Image (cartoon, rainbow, N blue to C red; front, side):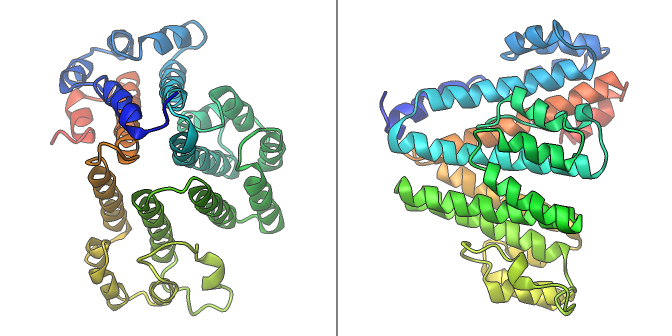
Length: 341
């Protein structure tokens, strides 16, 4: 199989053509109830997964399972027509979904949520297949999650083992997630070197590290003066714009002045944000802009990253619609939730 992105991106553009059009959302919004919504979804590219899930499950589980398996099938098809250096880069890119799924499972277990509640938020795409994720999510507690992960083939299994060891010692979910982030980005950076990844992809990963550090600093602002808070332990190395000193400055100072150095970075919009919600929106916008700019290179990995972002957004909209129709939410409210005004 060819390894160059010219061929791969041509195939991905074929996948992009199957993204749901605005007309689908209009029809889905007008569906009278959940059953009608399912019928509409069954006439879309999700048809095979909806039919399979309908034979095994009931209620919202049908949509959750169908969406997860569809996304997994799409990710697997991308890996199927990519090998060599390009294939390694795509696998590195898809590892982010394993990271996010492990965090979701850990949060669910920490909060005492059911396996069904946890799996409804998962998007399978990496090494952890839907069936494996269900097994992990069905563990009775965090120790069970760690045991299930140890039996997987995921590159993150050692990372989770290390993260769980910290959690077992202090019971802090935050420390578990931070340990996962550090180990994940360490693996990614090593993979980038092995794959001889181009500068654009390295910049994309560096921006994600910067975003992770900025979120951490904003979430723990004003604690830098607390002897119990070690900024070195919280900081994830490997970024470019959020330096260790800038990170420490935001962490230790809750005033707006501490955010001013961000004005000279690509995260400038965060400096004028009024709250964490606005800051998070600005961070997401930054990452989205970079992903879209990378997509302009027809021979780069940006086409793949941008497509997956669009597909992920589509999945989120479908989950929102499914729950809205299941619980009888009005079409006007759902339309606003979808960003239609």
